[in-house]
Image (cartoon, rainbow, N blue to C red; front, side, top):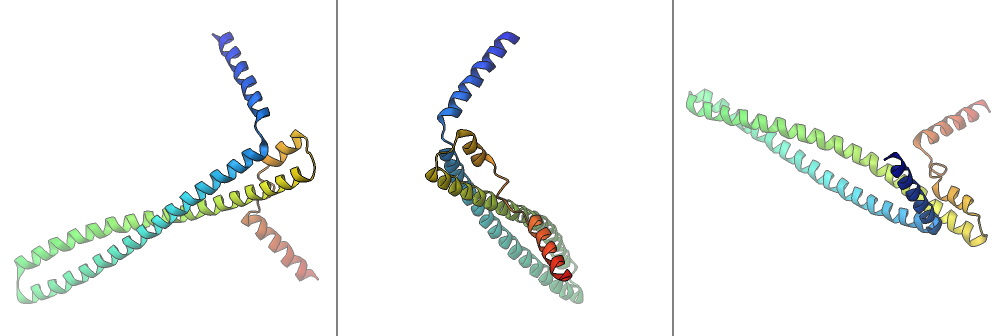
Length: 184
């Protein structure tokens, strides 16, 4: 069994090596950019849907709060008029509304949290897409100006972290500049 699995792995490795030789790195990079653009569009759509849901939940929450205020006013009138049965019905409706309001508040909180996570994911996707676009442009410039060997092309196509500038990098550079200017 071990011999068969090793031979199988060897054939798979050879097959993958042949595919790697056939594939063009620039085409792979362009396809990756297209896929990233599609994912970014889907992410933006999900964010817009989350914003609509959040606004809907906020409106519902406000309606429930207004309904609770109306019930309280009606309860005041019932107690002043000695209408216990009517007050019980209003209290029942108030308890139901409070429970629904509590559930809606939980959904609103989850929607807010999901929206924040979605915003972060969207920003990360935008940064990755921009990095991939820059690499594709750089790759295209490199290939149009001179013929590159395959190892250089592979390094250029797959080194994704070289061009990405994080918020922390910006903050550190900002502090260095501020310190340099304070010293001079």
